[in-house]
Image (cartoon, rainbow, N blue to C red; front, side, top):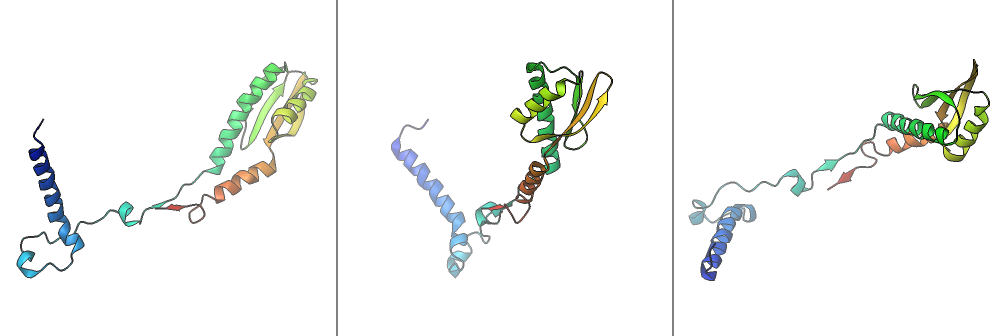
Length: 165
């Protein structure tokens, strides 16, 4: 490491002068003719981010977001049913924004409705079919919530929610 202050100042000055040498064509468009031969001809070209031409658009795939939300809800609902001691055979995400579950006892429907109403305000019972010793129930995302998710996707489309630097 260089300990002398004079040498460090000289190196810093040399670096600054070299930078100015390459920046002269960028700042001065017409260099006087005697010096024209000694300076570089090309300007330093700024990238798009420095010119202000960068355009960033973020998009959300609302169908995937809805499927992911339903997947999480089905896992949470499974835990809630076990905590509430509601007997069921299987619970799984079905097509689209629906959850399919099979109750082991028909009497478990009231407990299921209470859990859904108390803890899952975005879900509603779409249909139920009696099965041997139980019920098959289809839960779906409420239409209003699904529409809200679709609207959120429209706000992220190009031209609606883009940021420009």
